[in-house]
Amino acid sequence: MQEIAKQLSNPNGSEGVKTGEHMSHGNGPMIHRTIDLLDIKPNDFILEIGPGNGGHIHSILEICGNVKYQGVDISATMVEEANRMNEEAVKSGCVSFTLSNGEILDFSDNTFDKIFTVNTVYFWENPPEYASEIFRVLKTGGIFALSFSDIRFMENLPFTKFGFKLYDKAEAGNLLEAAGFNIFETIEEIEVAKSNLGEEVERPIIIIFAKKS
Image (cartoon, rainbow, N blue to C red; front, side):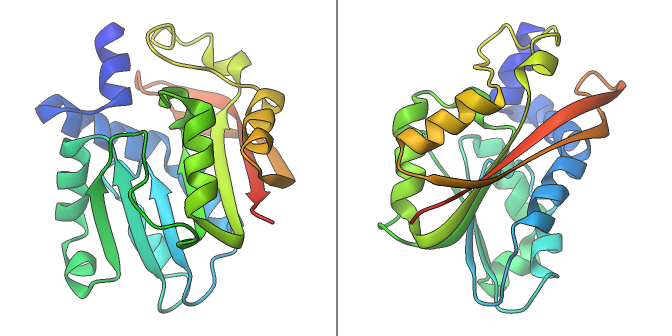
């Protein structure tokens, strides 16, 4: 369980590639739901924190034209896989993946129109500072979507006791508001997904939409 938790937080090597595949399938519905609700428009510059192997990027590019996408991940294995799986889009210049230290977002202030992240908040080393970093690189009027599973579900999984910081809706909302965000919508749904242990489960998902006013 400890090794599973380690790979989920930072996939590495051949096992990391397999973990990335599992996460792509398991998180797929949650990722696509977040993308669908993000209201992506032509010419948006989008940042995703923790895209894994990037198997879902095509769905962003299909929404509308002239979208520019930037993914950042703390896993060198996932950055390599994402570049491989999205080779044509990367060559075209509309998609880019870079390695991040998980603490600093190496972009100028007010860079992105939309930012989203799915199931990464559990691993933020310093949540208040990282939320402030996200706020900093988001344009005024831009939208941030934070997607995660509720603590009441996550705490029953055997691997989350190893290095996971779990949240409920209120605590996650407080984290974003303390960074300066204005929360304007919170979606709570139940989805059927395949767990990281390969089991089909019903899990509660929370998607918080916040604006930089």
